[in-house]
Length: 302
Image 1 (cartoon, rainbow, N blue to C red):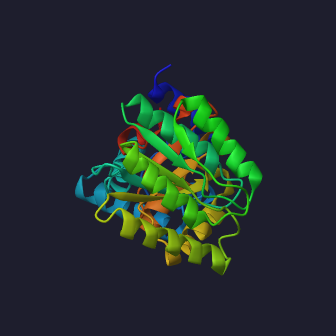
Image 2 (tube, rainbow, N blue to C red):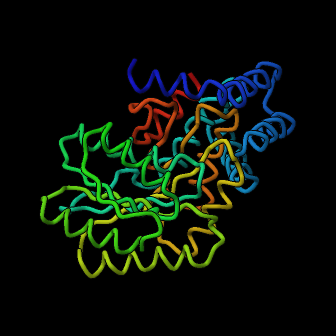
């Protein structure tokens, strides 16, 4: 099964929550009027497309209907696909890995699939021919170090780790030296996944950032925030808090296959202005892939 088919399968719950509801509404109307738009608005909001984003989408749809003189309600679906693709394509979703080594810092609260995502990203990059090194910077839980080591063995990449309770910045420092010595292409750093409201966690992120600045000046860097799609608006709240302390370059959205409210993808992109760079639609290694706006919308409306 190719990734588009897996994406289509993974978005089944969301498709039932959004697309099938939209189809029912469009079929039931003989003309395009305010009531039709009101019902579309309700579907989007209940699918975790935020209020502001929904209002923007509805206003744009009304304008396109007027400009193109569309009278058939069923044609509104194509306009909606066009609108969603535009919103989701506004920024580049590619990872910047132009330097060697490039650095990827991965942040996120416990339980969102952070360590699993790191393992899958490492596997993806290795498949693409890159030499990857992992840094076990979540030293507050022995389980996090062990889990990352399991993933390093599974995908066949090296890992730098210290003992539980060690200074995360020291782990990253050692990992940078190893990445240089081993001529690694990409260094992926795990970070502590404690509650995002804890001030000392944010201070740790800043300390790690300073070490990277000093030891790898000019290195291309991604700071990826892992969010669980099934937590809906709570994921948006997490992103807002993390954004206050870390310059997030992209989102890794996990567990999209587990929610009927996949509209959260649109909210994150539209309201936070942070590109979704990777999405997960299943448990397998290949179920985490680069986000492609047009493929996502096609799979959603398939």
